[in-house]
Every structure is written in C-alpha cells, then in structure tokens.
Length: 462
Image 1: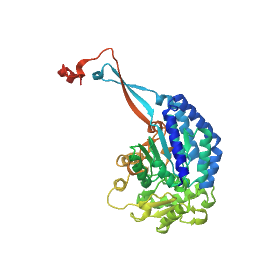
Image 2: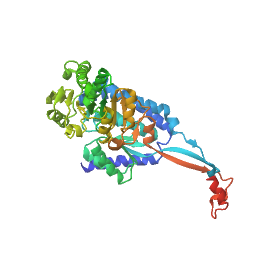
Image 3: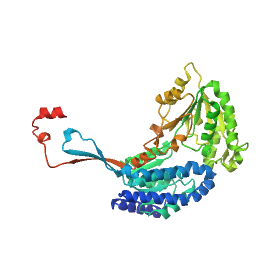
Image 4: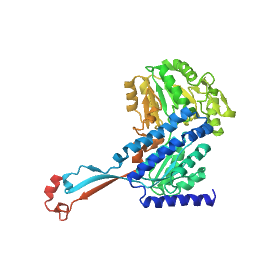
C-alpha cells in the first residue's frame, strides 16, 4: 500500500473525528434526517446494487431483494420510527439513600466507527450496521470486500453521493488496507467475517481498548429427529443450504439425523432441490456461484474426499457446485472441522445406546458454540435441545429465518462472535449507556460525610 493511500485514509479519519467532536451528529433530528436520506438513496440505487450482485455473485434480483435489499430497508424504517424513543433520556428509580437525587440513563454515540464487511452478503452486512451507526450519532468509515468489486464500487458511489465524506465514507482495498485501518484509533469496530480474522481485529482493537462487535460464523448444526415432518424439513434445509449457494454464515453446516429417517430425508432433499431449482440446477438463474476460484477449490475438495449421497457435480469454468449431501464423513475430516461456506452438507448419523436428543446435545456442546442451531421435530423437544446447548440464535422447524426479524437481536456467542445488532440492538451497539445522578442543593444531609454521625440509622437505610 502506497503512502498516498495511507495519507488519504488518515485525512478521512481525522476529518470524521473533527466532525464528530464539533457535535454535528448529536441532534436526533439530524440523525433522522440522515436515515431518511439514506432510505431515499438506497431506493434510488437499488437497481444498480442488484445488477452488481448479479455480476459478482450470479445472485438473482429476487434473491438479492429478499436477502439484502429488503433487510436493510426494513432496518432503516424501524430506526426512523423508533429513534426518538430509543434516544430519549430515561428517568429511573432512585433509592432513598440517594435523597435528594434523581437518576437518569442517557444514550450517547460512541464516536468514530469502523465497519468491515465480508463478500457473501456485501450490501446487507455492510449497510445494516451503518443504520445503527447513523441512528446512534456516530461517524463511520465503511470497508467493503474487494472480492465483490462491482458491489463495492456501487456502494462507494452511493455513499459519496449521499453523505459528506467527513460524516460517512468508503475506503476500498485488500487486507493491507484493513491492517492500516485497524492500526488506527476508533471508538467502535464492527467486524463481520471469520473467527480467525476476528482474532486479529480484536488484537488490534485491544491496543486502544476499543470495543468491538464481532459477527462471525462457525459450524451451525441442523438436527433432524424422527418426529420431524421430513418433507418440510427437506424443503427448508434445501432452501437454506442453496440460498446464496450456501455462502451464508448461518447456513446449516452439517446435519445430525436420526437413523430411522435418514433415507427418507435424502430422498426428500433431492426432490426439493428439483422443486427449488429445476431439473438442471446449473441453468437456474436463482442459483448463485462460488465467489472465486479459491473458494471453489476448497469446497470441491470436500466432495472429493467424501462419500456422496446426493449431487456432487461441479464445473470449474463457471464456479458451479451442485447441492451435495455427504455420507457420514470422519468427524476429524476438514469438512467437519471447517465452516463449509458452500452448497455441501454432511449428513451424520450418530449411533450409540443413548437417546437421540442426549447424543446430539453432547455432540453440539463438545464443539465451539455455533452462530445458529436448527432443530426439526417436536417443538417441546426442540426447546429441550435449546436449553441444553448454546448458539448465537436459531430456529425450531426452520432455518435462517431468525435473521429476517429486525425486532430480535442477531449475534454470536463464544467462537461465533460477540455483541448483537438489528433494531434497538443496533442503536445500542454504537451507543454508550451513561448513568447520570442529578442532586438537589436545597438540602444537604450530613449522613454521608465524615465523621459519619448517626451511623446506626444510616446502616438501616442502606
């Protein structure tokens, strides 16, 4: 990276720091105005964003709208509607021991924010956090992924046309640019990506004690019990695994299935793939491609090293991989140790003398905490599994859909991340919750002062 790039980044960061300290973003009316401007711009640029998603990822307009555009639009609208309520100074109960004081909770912006996003949902995962930064009153530097250059370029053009660069700006580049950005001092860093890269982000942030929100991934299990509606389970799992060609951080990463329903699930999965994508999946406009040759090679190696239950074909020229089920791979095989991020799904049948629910909960809890957990079967049993495991979020008798509700938080736990966002949680993520005590001067009780007269009475009050 050349000196001109470093100088440009420094100028942007310093300008944003000055802009924030001058108080431009503090007024809630200003923030709502910016949210409305953002919504208007987003709607104007929707077509160009979708065209770029098709170019970079072969993502159809319908899928782009459902998984990217609609989610950001819903988030902006929620913040416009709720911002006054969220930002309002809150009066809280004050105990007698603090008389004559009143107690308040005040929300204030953390300051200068850095948002780093990945390539798999390059619009949603960059711009959804930005909504929280705007509503909380932060300035923001956005760092999109270089692996989706057309999307990143359109986003930069949209942001530069919509906002002053000293308020919100886009910085392009590869990992050397990420390194330069992370070496700088920020008031909050919001990172979406892999756990491995998150450790670098967290290490850099620790140099300045900068708070971080880490939205990561991991191996999200999909449990299919014998009480499941197999046809519905197969349809929803096939949809969740082929959405964005499996390049989704909360895609089902492996199936733990009851032996009595394995054969029927595999058959139903094959049928549902045809229902979703037609007889020739490769020809379906709604079937996304792998992002680059490196990702294609990594995912096809999983197929080459395993026994295929269904699918297994691929075409390197267009980075196409057919939806594929793998049969009981070794638990220490790469496909069972690494996040797959592709349309390949290991199907694991757990044998042993223990009841199925006990076996699967042991299997899940012996591994890193996943970003999502899915259970298909009787709802009561699903709640039992949830109570005995930990994950960022999840679904009973569904997959992925918990991310679609902007009124519930989204985030990881342990190896799958820290912090959460969406709706009020996005506002809170970029805000500092400040406690303020306001004490009257019309009386000054002597009990707290040395030499602590009437201490026996004070003890009773406390």
